[in-house]
Length: 79
Image 1 (cartoon, rainbow, N blue to C red):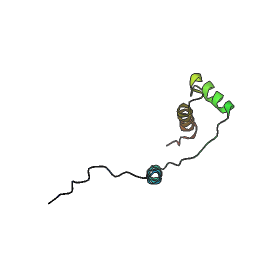
Image 2: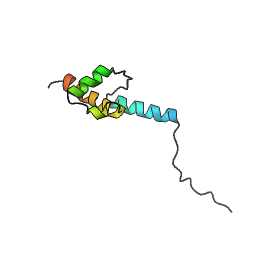
Image 3: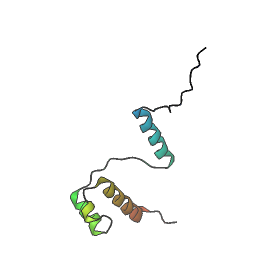
Image 4: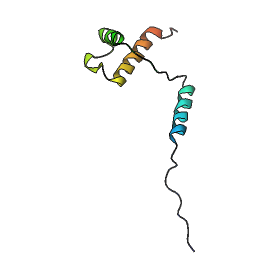
C-alpha cells in the first residue's frame, strides 16, 4: 500500500490574484493607488522644502516618501 505524502508546499498565487489581494487590502485601509507624473520643478521644490535630499532626486521610493510627507503636512485634517 502506498501513501501519498501531504502537500507541504504552500499554495502559490497567480500575479493577478496577488494584485487583487493588495488592492483589497489598500481599500480596507482607505487607500487608493494612483499613478502620478512629477515635474522636475516639483522635485526641486521638495528639495527646497527639506522633504527630499538632493542626492535622492532620481530615487522613485524617496520621491514618493517626500510626496507623502508633503501631503501629510498640507492636507492633514485638523481634529
